[in-house]
Length: 311
Image (cartoon, rainbow, N blue to C red; front, side, top):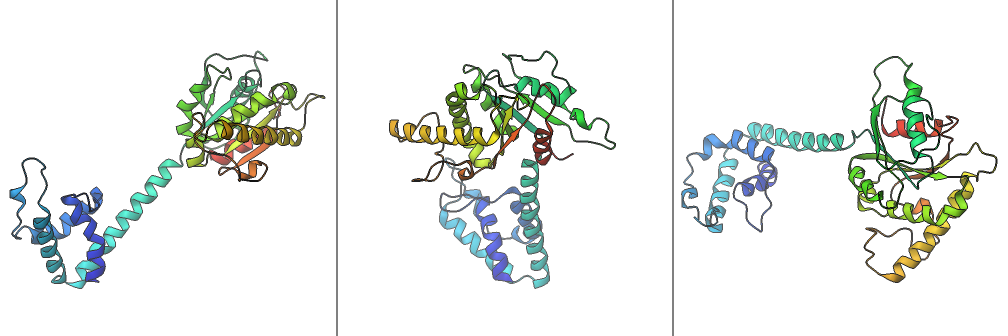
């Protein structure tokens, strides 16, 4: 047990007087070390008063002597007390680790992205008010709101509101997307399934940039490719749109790699080398769904949101 506690406390001991070769301890470890060891360590012949005026750190030899004295003191303590100290230390590390994970997963922000005219703003209004309002609207500023989904207003009990952000699709305004992604639980990339073919290349380029952003890849932010205006007779199917986007992104992947091995606009490369690109190759989850913002057929959108932002 003495050896186990020394192994656990050694980073804490070193953390009091850091050196380039030794890891610093978190505040919780230093606090526990103070509680369990301070009464005995107060009588140790420390040379802390001989701190260097320039660096403010103990000389390495003095620190090693002090660590050795602490090790001797630990071997002299009752095993029961050491078990308690060790258990509290482990619990503290586990508690703060879980706290950081849970805090990071509590985001209720969903970001709407896509080309201008794809129907993002109409979708925003449908989710918030259950109405398309003015029909086709081109936004020059982000629409931002925190609300309970309109379809859930009649449900009983407390519901978790959704923070929805509609980012303008104009090429000059797309950089605003980077302001919201660090807080996003998910991204809905809206595609116009009615006029898809003329805009296929532009949509694929925008989607490529989103998929290769560092924040998307590192946090594995889920993305829903939403084929809007699916109620129209001449609208393309989501399967067709998915395949065409995969083909265009595969071309982009090849062309951008040929231009530069360190593409400035992309943080990560997509796909598996030597294989045709597929959304299944992405590190984050990418799904495709149909919707119609004008008619209010948005059940798959609401399902995507509620999988990420629990009611």
